[in-house]
Length: 451
Image (tube, rainbow, N blue to C red):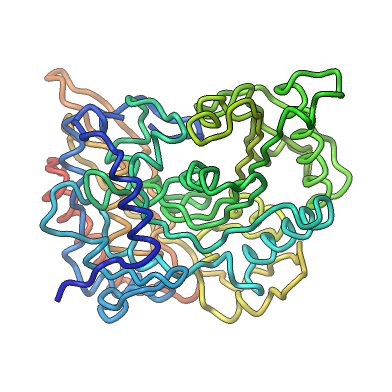
């Protein structure tokens, strides 16, 4: 019998989807909130992005030493918050709207942020400590919510525009036309408000199709903070609700930055997010440069009114755990967070924030170049999905190093692929095998002409 997603996860999904309007092609035409994004992809690109699974089992196995990507793990159900999620619920080869590969399914349920001796767990608990001391018994914490959400939860509930690029198959992992792997922890905001929560922190793994380099990975971890104020809170302050919430927000987050980084210079930068107005980014001057710490703002009234909080105001913030942990622990490559190598894991202990990582790998990278004529459907994210699907975490970077358009109007791209293991030396045979399979998959999956 085909396994099903059961209990709370399924009920929440059904409730959310019951009010979801019929999806049209336009709904998938393009964006990614809350971060800056590229221009929307043409609708034709969506078809190419639906299935990009590897066809080189040997090469895939070589790249999976630090990942749970074996056939047994891929077939077994994983559990998130007491909810069992089977592979067939996430990876659907027979559904043309599904673009989730096994390499992504293998990350569901690992929950690095819930491991107290892991850099992400240490950082999470340090942030918890700040809120517990600053706001005793006020903030409810959620770190085990199901990552499968409806498009309504992920986009509509937080006012992501219909033409925003994060809605495209090029940027988001779709389980089916109305269900995605959450792109941000904000996907749970509306549901928690409807349940009556006014102070909460949501932490979890989030999923985005992305480029390949030392700071980007298709699965990472976010923390969302949310606080609601009633008219009684600001009535005697001499400020309106928006100004009161913005002032409290900045004070709270400046305190958090000091808690994490010590006495540092800070500045606020005005920005834009679909779900807050006004919106800000907090930057700190750290190690000789300005570092963006988080994005935040005063919640749009439409979100509050839609979820039973008329006449209230609220603030919200979101931060990436990996981004901050890489700075605080001096971790040079985002892939290391997924390593099970004891030379990495043994360096960190519960409650010890900022222990500096000591590199244990001096293995050199191997570079392979690949040139091809692109078509109108080509996107770099699709290319990265193909490469990652074959090489796993053995691919360190995919970088465009040259492009030109000839007199016939044909455009050529040349990409340099860097292969490197952080744990061992790669053999020439392994690298050549992976590169050969990458070339074959790029040609067949992306329908480009190799040069």
